[in-house]
Image (cartoon, rainbow, N blue to C red; front, side, top):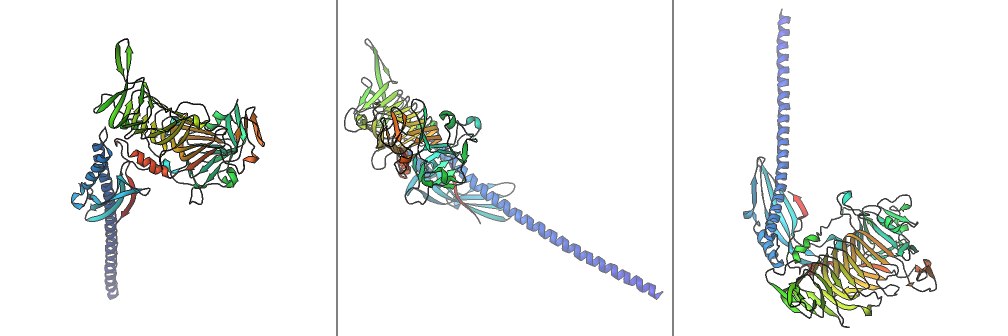
Amino acid sequence: MKILMNEKGYSLILTMLIFLLFTVLSVSVLTVALSGVKRNQTSEDYVQARELANKGIEHITNQIQSDLKNELGEEGITRSEFITKLNTILNRYKDVINSVHNTGATGEYRVYIRNIENVIENGEENPLKKKITFLSRGFVDGKEKTVISEVEIGAQSVLETLHYALGANKLCKTPNACIPGEGNMFLHGGVSITGDMKVDGNLIITNRGYAYLSGEKWIASVYPSILPTQGKANANLLLGGNIFTFNHTPPYEQHITTSNFGSSYTKLTDRIDDAFYNRQAPVIVKRQPIRDDIQIPAQKSVFYYKHNSPGVTIIKANNRIISNQNRPNDKVYASHDECFFIWCNEKYDGDYTFTGNNLFKSFATAGSLTIRNSDNQFKQTTFKEGAYIEKNLTIGNGSNSYNPNNYDKIRVDGPIFVNGDLTIKGADAEFNSIMYVMGDVTIEYSRINGLGQNGSLIIFANGNINIRNNSVNQDEPSNIKGFFYSEQALEMFGVGSNIRIEGGISARRIVLNAIRGRASNRYFEGAQRITNNDYFEGAQNQIGKLSRLQIIYDPEIINTYADIKSREPVIKNLDPPKIINRDIE
């Protein structure tokens, strides 16, 4: 009986011990669980606080952009006005007392401008842009996260396309919007390039140049060469697709408009030394290219005004010729009289011609304009704040001669918008100008140099650009100092022609044709005969000779662009905000 009672007592004690053990374990597990929940909640609060701080940066950046756009309006504002407005708006959000505050269901943020710095581009200050340091704090349930972000805000940054000797751009967003061969670059024969290249599509190379000489002719040459600019070990190639070579004779138009390079082409992306002169190949660089949004048609409103716009001075063109006008403070519009017997009507859409020296604050016409000079000394046309040409612009006398002594000596200074085509023909011309061209551009039978130490001709064309027939069969090249950008295709010949470009070219499709050495309409020793009137340096003899198409990148083109751009009468567009750096504390 005592044994039985002792067993019951031990059972009770054991049960109580087990109960106590489970209670302790349960409490411990619950404590750990609650602690984990608390840690998770704290971590989640910090994540939400960080997101709110980032949202604050986004909020204040969008607000500043909106404020600036409201100041620009539809008509834009002058450069000096923009600088003032930019500084005023940024100071509106500077320091903690001017912080932007927002409270929502999950928490709140406070953000303000901690610092404003000048932006230096190419060694010079750009007063139209500022580097802003934002400080933003996010708060959730007593938890706080701080984000510090550096952002560039303003207008008129240097275009990415101006950093390359050659740039083939793929701009279309859908296949139906692409031009044939979009993003491709074709280097046919002994083209010589100094500087970096950007090819969004494919690079197609051969050791023969092309010319149409009583039919399609592929002329034996050498492979193209690419050399680095001074101070660099190698030239860079930013390549989006592949490199192909070919040795057949395809139909030219079909060849340059294809994007499908089949078995008749050899892929050399992994051994590109074989595709370049002296096996001196560029270094392939893989990175996401920056897309410039130049918006050529939008530039029209910067320059356009009517004959009856406020402050306009009308000048009558006798016989539609305007000569030796000195109007540095006048906003000028051209007109002429059309008479029937004694009745005359004033018209504004004539084909006007400039001769002599002409200086305007700004100029506009509803017609076309030709710039000529019959003197053997240079004459200059200057547009201090730009010109608008409704129809076509022609520069030169239209000569078909290969001798520059037969060309008009013309200087052009200032930005110009051409709503039609641009033709430079029969001109020995010096430029310091940006031209926006809605139509096509043709440059032939001309010699083009910069006006002054750093002047250049910079063309942004909505249509095609063709550069041809310059210094045909001559040993000395035509010098063209400029940068040429096309929203369509650019084609250039250095087979019979002899061209040296200091600057660069960029288009949605680029085709360059060249040989090295001599070209003539008569036989010479070592020549290859193509027709009875067309002889070119033999392929073996081309080794070591100068190319008849040289493109040499000029870094000063960036400064020229910035200088001329600053003379445009109004600023109408903002650059997108550019994030430089972002830190989380």
